Image (cartoon, rainbow, N blue to C red; front, side, top):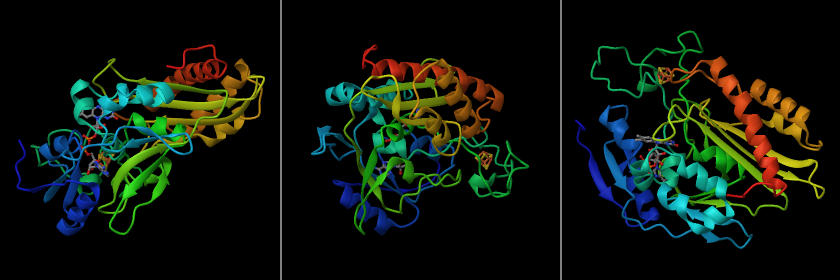
Length: 337
Ligand SMILES: Cc1cc2nc3c(=O)[nH]c(=O)nc-3n(C[C@H](O)[C@H](O)[C@H](O)COP(=O)(O)OP(=O)(O)OC[C@H]3O[C@@H](n4cnc5c(N)ncnc54)[C@H](O)[C@@H]3O)c2cc1C
Ligand code: SF4
C-alpha cells in the first residue's frame, strides 16, 4: 500500500511526458513499468508528488539504423527486448542481459529505459522502514551510512544493479533523449553520476526515447555473465560483459571493452585490463594478466551480504570464463546466441 497522495498524469508521447514533468515540477517522476519506482514508493524511499505515466505510449519495434546498428525504443519491455528477432540475431548479448532480469512479471512490465534509470540499491535502504525510529541514512536525507560508517561523510555507497547497462556499455551503445530544451545523444556510459544518492545524471524532465547501438566489426565476440544467488528472480552479485575483436588471423586482440556491473555506484569499465588485452596474442597467460588487472581496477564495494573478497573471487573465476567465451565466439567456435 502507498500511504501518500500523488497526482497521476498519463502521457500520450514522450515530448508530452517531458512537458508534463516540467510543468509538475521537482517532485514529479516518470513511470515506465513502475517495477523500480512503485516498490520504492511503497516503502517511502521516494515520495513523488506526481507521476507521469508512460505505459500508454506504444514503443516502436527495433529497427536497423542507416549505419547498420540497431535502434531500440526506450519503452520496449524487457520481455519484448529478449525475444525480438532483430535483437536475438544481431545483438544476442543484449537479449541475454534482458532475459536474466528479475522474473517474467518484472520483464513483462519493466522497460529498457526504466532499467537503465533504476535507482541504486543497498540492504539498509531497500526494506520496509515502518520502524522509522531508525536514523535516516544519507540517501534518505539523514546523517549516517550504516554499511560504511567511516567512509567519506555525506557519501552514499549504494550499488547500481542493472543487468543491461554493462552489456550496452560493452556494445558502445548510446541513448537518445527527449527534453523541452532539445534532445541529445550520449554514450550509455556517460549517463551515470557515480554518486549513490543520485546515480542518474539526466536533466530533470529529460527522458530516454531510444538506445542506439553501432554496427559490429568482423571477428567480433562477446561474453556475458550474471552471478546471482538463485538462477532467476534475483538481483546480481556481479555482472560481467565483454566485447572484443580479433585480427584477421584471429590470434590477436585488436579491440576490447570489459565492463563490470553491480559492484559499485555505476558500471565499471576496466580500461587498464583492456589495455593489457589489446594488441596481444591470445593465450592463457594473457587471460590471467587481464583478469588480474581487472580485479585490481574494479574495486568492488561489499554489498547485499557479499564481502569484498567474495566479489573479487567471483570476478576472478567468471571474467576468465567470459573472456574465453568471447574469443571462442570471435573465432566462430561457439554459437553466436
Ligand atoms: C522483484 C524485482 C526484481 C528485479 N530484478 C532485477 C534484476 O535482476 N536486474 C535488473 O537490472 N533490475 C531488476 N529489477 C529492477 C527494475 O524493476 C527493472 O530493471 C525494470 O527494467 C525497471 O523498468 P521500469 O520500466 O519498471 O522502471 P520504472 O519503475 O517505471 O522507472 C524506474 C526509474 O526510471 C525512470 N524512467 C522510467 N522510464 C524512463 C524514461 N523513458 N526516461 C528516463 N527515465 C525513465 C523513472 O522515473 C524511475 O526513476 C527488479 C525489480 C523487481 C521489483
Ligand atoms: S550505502 Fe547509501 S543507501 Fe546504504 S546506508 Fe549508506 S547512505 Fe544509505
